[in-house]
Image (cartoon, rainbow, N blue to C red; front, side, top):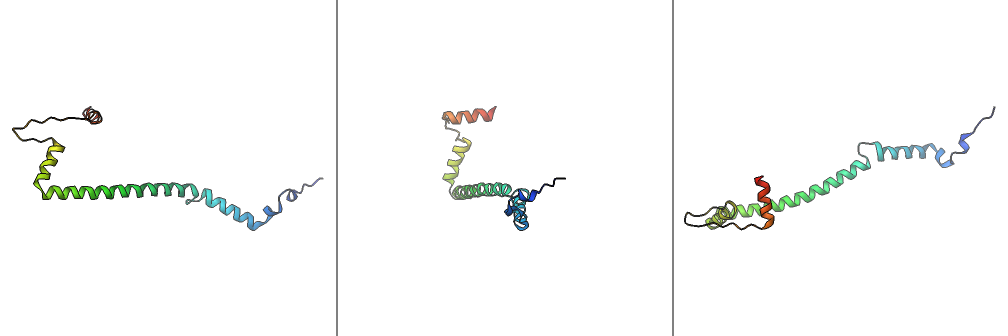
Length: 112
């Protein structure tokens, strides 16, 4: 009977049980663990996007707060806001609304 010795075909480095255990451990961490590299990459990408969104909303809140303060303190600004945003007018005035093509497309989309 011929006996095959497979241990001679395997490189000596891979026969080391400590190195083999380390390789298995690293593969487990990189691919199968709940905190693997793929999920960490996705989480870091989402975190970057959320930080950008946070900066945008902070700037938007500051601008809106300033506009609200202006509207609450000055009646002239309140009247200007009402005329521009809600197309309000006095009884003896005529109101003409001129829209750019992009604004016209937005209005037709909203009405449909």
